[in-house]
Length: 184
Image (cartoon, rainbow, N blue to C red):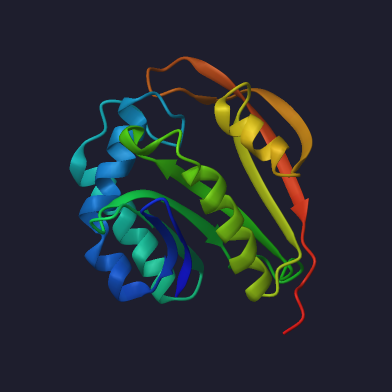
């Protein structure tokens, strides 16, 4: 399903088969982001096999219907960005999804891809019947500003919540966004 195509970049949701075929390019995006200092659950140096294993697990989650995986591709069809919705939630939270691992390769940044991925995630969440989205991000980073501009509501900050890839502690800011379900 095509979600958007502008400026030579396309953002779309992929199914399980494509997710499994995309393990290597998705691992490359993750490796680039962690090497560049992104605090996205991994430390540097990040072994390629660990990055590939992470994406294999994501693809398995897509196959089980637990996750929605979006990719941003350049004109040549190369994956340069990605984001996920964690759809599987506890029984008392079927209306909620978590946004996870929004990543854009450093060579494709400053082109609006993160905003397009975020907008596409919100559209996919609505299609899935979700009315509340939740995410966390490094306090003070570019992503925090992106979410605030996108209408996300800041919930609060937890000091020393995670580590940067180089081992320095960092604070994490939590956001949520209510969604209205679109009529079909």
